[in-house]
Image (cartoon, rainbow, N blue to C red; front, side, top):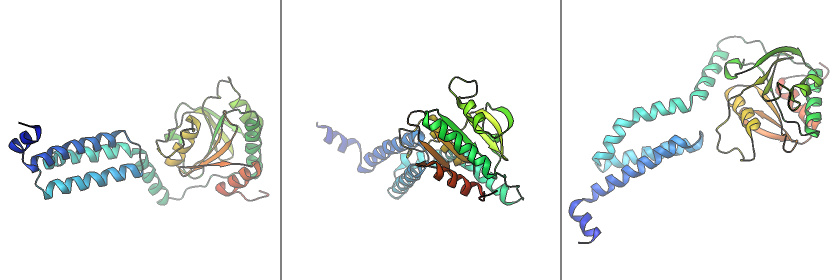
Length: 256
């Protein structure tokens, strides 16, 4: 008896489809657990939905039973995976329901930040600077050293200079002052980020995915300066462009 004859004798076409669908379900679900957020998860959910409808229409008993039992697990998994986005959405809802004082910055402070970034970029000193706008990010960061210091280019450079105690982490600027140093930020899991991006770039994207902050990255490998906002990051080719970008994002007028 050949293998095909064996299948025909002991399994109907519905049984074979049921088994195939079950394997497909587990493949998609395992991939779902490991894959990063974004459109990929949406596509996987669509595929699982189609597979579930397919099982219902063709009365595939095993597959239908699996879906009935595991939809709750899938929902719970979604909540866990999208926890940062849910928290950000709730925070944004909170911002709309009460008046929030905008963080205020002066042009001279931006000049000092840009001057520090230029100095570090020319010497390939890695740096990560986060500037708050409306949202307070203290609940998103860890391991910070409280400073509350006046913004100067020299202080920023000193913080990030290699082998200094505070260089390995992010500086957080709030209300025209250096609030914290050596901060640990949440890392982005966006699969579309280039593989060349290291921890600093992923941290910059991560904190801007979860808040309205602006993040500046100086690469220690290339000396390139990048700015991240709303989960997007772009390379800044010129220091004047960096100043203009920060002035625009922070709502600072020239001469302020």
